[in-house]
Structure formats: C-alpha cells, structure tokens
Length: 360
Image (cartoon, rainbow, N blue to C red; front, side):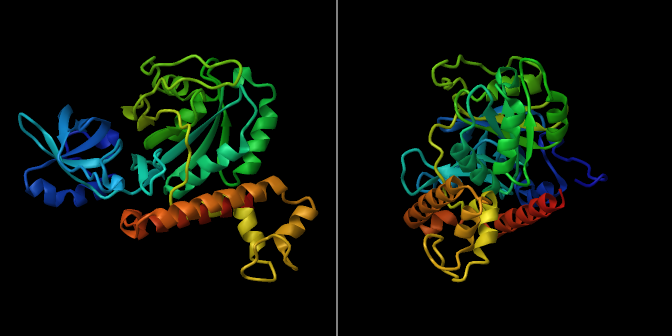
C-alpha cells in the first residue's frame, strides 16, 4: 500500500483495504455502495466489517450452481446500506484457499479469500503425518498465498528438533516454526511474521489452531476442545470460518478442522510441493516418462541412489491421480474463477521460494 494512500473507506485499512482495492471499488462507490469485508457467513447472512463498524447483512449474490463464486470469509464486497443491508457484489479475489467439496462432487469449496499467509498447524503431540502435510501444502501453494508451517504443542513434543527437520525436508522453501501456545515459545516471532496481512489457519481437528489463535489474539476468544489421547484427534470446536483482527496489525481467519483434505485443480501447488521430482523428471530420457521401469528414468535413479524416498514418489503419484480425477469432473466454467492473474502470482511465488531454497 502506498505511504500516501488516504483511506476513504472510513477505517478498513487495518482489515487489509489498499489503494488498488479502492480503485477497483470506484464504480461501486459511484452507485452509492460501501466497501465491506466478510468476517463470517452463516445461512444466507453474513457478518461484515465496514468503515463505520460491523453489520449483519443479507447475501444478495449467492451462486448456488457455482460454489466457487459464493461469498466467503475474507471476501471484499460492495454493501448496499440501509435498514436491511445487503451485499450485492464481490471484488475480484487475489487469492483463494480451495479444496474439493466434502460431498465429492465436481465442485470446489472456497475456504477463505484474499489471504496473504496460510499457516499450516501441525501438532507435535503425535508423529508427523507426511502425506497430510503434503496435501495441505499443495492447497496452500496453489492459493497464491505464502505457506508457513507451525509445529504446535511443542511442550508435548518427543523430539521437536527432529520434527522440524522432517517438516523442512517435506517443504523446501517454506518457513517452519516450532511453537507452543501453552509456554509462548516463538509466539513473538510468529506474530512478527503475520503482522499486517491476512492469515488463515489450516489443519486437522486437534492440531491446536484455536489455542494458537487465542495466543496470537491475546484473548480466549475462540473455543478450545479436548483431544483424545488414543489418537490425538480433537472435536470441531471451530464450527465456521471467522475473521478477527490481530492486536499487532493484520487479521486472522480461523477455520474448522479439516478431516477431508481433497485437492481441487491444484496442479501448480503439486509442482511446488514435489519440486525435486519435477526437476528430476526434466532429466528423464523420455518426455512422457511414468517414472516406473522406463530406461533412463532420472527419478528412479535418484531412488536407487537414496537421494529420493520411494514414499515421496508414491505420494506424488497418488495426489496427481486425485487431482486429475477432480479436474476431469470439473466443468471448465467452474474453473474460470481461478484467473490467469492468480496463476501468475502462484508461479511467481514458486519461483521466488525455489530461488531462496537454492541460496540457503
């Protein structure tokens, strides 16, 4: 945001309002509408933040046939004020967190919009689930936001250093931070990393997202549930996505625990998560190498040399099959929301982090 930008929205800058958003809103302002950011969606209504404060508004722009266009937490919208406020238009999204819908239809589900950082919460109270982390990383990378892995519950860790090394190996180019909401470990560093932008918390039930959110907020604002000792799983204490301001600047979106983490049109995200396999594949003898038993396969050569774990290739293949299946079931019209601009942002981020990883 420009240092000379004067916010005419009346106070939305702390929620992420920028000069470019203000320019995009000009036509709506001329029509007598006001800018608002959606904080929570609930049964055809939403809580939204405006320059004059929070409002409860009706959604007049629902797209039942196209869930990707349905308003969600984090969206910037045009509000028609009055006794019964209504959101009548959405501003273009610069990033979206998308997964396949829980119903396993061809539709995608937008979990949050206009996010700068995706915090993937991984609990250290249980062994690290590599496959689940790879799925979450693919969704995060594909969103056009910056992924950040936070290893929570460090006070319950058997070996935090080993878990940090394992997560770092699975996520080249991604910052990995060990933290504990109970002891405050590294919370100051995390707060600094998240300051000023929009952050979304992703992870499974029991990962410690709500405890982490409360620690960042400095208040027991979000409900925290017990975790079963036998499997480390928790109940869904967060039942809907909600946007709240952070004390040090920026906003936070807490999400319900993800039990079904299915990919949706996440080819770019997979390329980044498995960048080492993508790089090796460029050296295979055949351009259409399946990395199975073909002669001159650089991927299989790396496995035999101990440079690439076989589990890693198996996970890559599994997620590719899942993503291809989802893409085949998805109508091209539904994928239209994933604009070329967002894809360009994703490619730029991937190139930036890959370069940084090579320099480290």
